[in-house]
Length: 443
Image 1: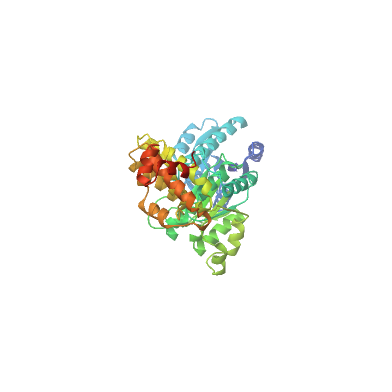
Image 2: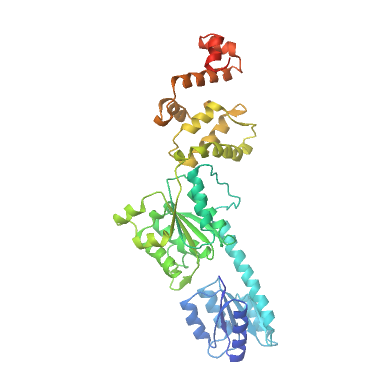
């Protein structure tokens, strides 16, 4: 979003020349010839830069500088001073001015100073985003061998040139946050901030402050003004997980941002203008919540311009094997172990478990197995007892095997367990070597 600049200059020719130059550079520039009128504008909206002459009737530039810094310390001020008034310029710098320029000045010189502030603002916004919220890894790994996940990625690809809000649905742990990142980093906003917030982790007061920021003195402990995530994410994307946890008052505030592109900080009186794309996520049925009066229907339709449903892991069995391999490679370096993969028995257990916790649970299982495993492959003994027990007790009607298949599978496991020694396997199974060969379909 272009910087908003307010120029305060009582000489009309100079004022118009400065405004024309700034607008040609793509900035949103406004002007006034009076300090008091400048303050009125500052009361109504936020400006990134104020460029003011030091000598003006009624209110001079130094007085205006003090007022600006008192009301909005983040606004940078450039002072225009007359030739030879270096002492006034030094005083202005002591009072918080970013820079000064002396008359007569080159408009290109002024533009260079404005561009320095612009770069500083971009860096400041990016630093705050990185410092405040999660480490964003652009090298996203999304496993999509199953048809269900291929449909999800097709949907993400289909909206890469669009800019509307998106609603992500699906059970907890299916990877909705990862999909939100994929949407952002394949969009036109990919080089701008991506922030993520779980709405269920804060009280209403803290969540309001996290989202919309607050002014100094807005509540006990608010010792300074603070930008909220909506403001920091300006020109970028804000992902809101567990959107149903927003209270009615916060739903109303979010709706105002979606409809009008503006909001008020907690305790603030000036509207803050922003351009943010929202990606909301939930594991609940929003339509049922609307019927129960717990979620605003108008907010639902503003968020749900496009809905992307991520299926649970139990419906994506083709993804379990590659996901397990991915998590093994992800967590193995921390263990200093040399685990090459999974035994067939361990993988069978992983493939037949239902994963109520979805991908998040699978990752925890693999990380735990790495810690416990003493050999070079993950074995059933390194998997949680609960899922091994379920493997024994649970029968999937669609996967019932014939007796011959079961006998062959069991005999094969015994042979593998004994390192391929068929004679020993036949002895343990209580059958002849010839019978074992027939079971394994070997002549």
